[in-house]
Amino acid sequence: MQDSLLAALQKVKHYCAYQERCHSEVRHKLYSFKLNKNEVEQLLTQLIEEDFLNEERFAIAYAGGHFRTKQWGKEKIKYALKQKKVSEYCIRKALIAISNTDYNKTFFNAADKKLKTLKGEKNIFIKKKKIRDYLQQKGFEIKLISDYLKAL
Image 1: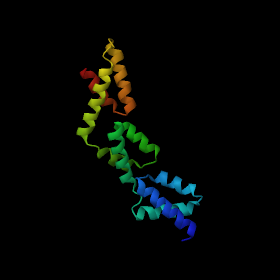
Image 2: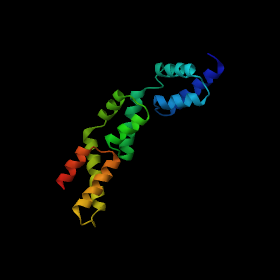
Image 3: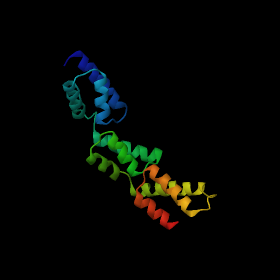
Image 4: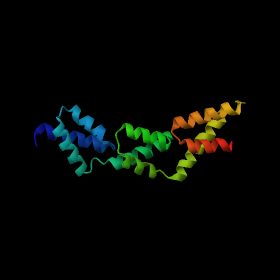
């Protein structure tokens, strides 16, 4: 392996070791080193073989992190992972890894918190619309939101 390729491999190993990365992020990083397509694919293969790069592990870490820190719903997480070109299989695995108990607790906390901010709103339809819009923006499923709003 030539020196520039070895240097790029060392840099990208450090890049991957720092935090979990998806294939598209690493591919983009490798192209930024002015490598050609064959060199990029060769290095990606090596990173996968040496377990520096694992898309399923990335998806699970990404989904869990965004769920816990930003209280994102599954729809928003799924969309973000698709934007990062993560496979459907890995997206499904990541969403399954989120505990239903924690997910429902987070959903109800977000909904109740939004409801409390709307105490001054007298019109129930406007109140429900604002709650629905907020929960959809957070990425929660329409069915979950509808069931919550029916119970109000």
